[in-house]
Length: 82
Image 1 (cartoon, helix red, strand yellow):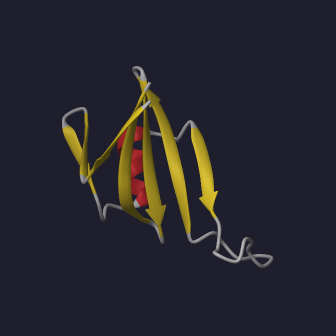
Image 2: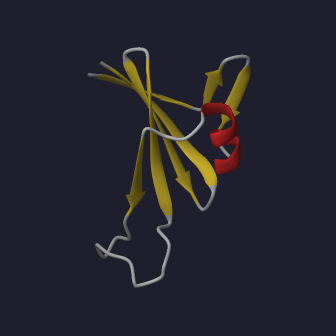
C-alpha cells in the first residue's frame, strides 16, 4: 500500500485544507467510514474526558483518505492507495 501526505484535499469542486473545522470535513465528505480516537501519551483518558484528536477514514475508489482532527481542526491528510 502506498501512502501520500497532503496539505489540501480536493473534494468535488471544493477544497479542504489544514486548519479547516471538523464540521467542514463532514459538510464536504459526509460521515467517516471509520472513526478512531487518538489516545493520551499515558495510554488512557480519565472518565468523562474527550480524546484530544481523531482520525476519520473515508473509503474512495481504491484508496482510503485519512483526515486527522485535533481540537476540532484538521491537522493532517493522508491518502492510502490500495
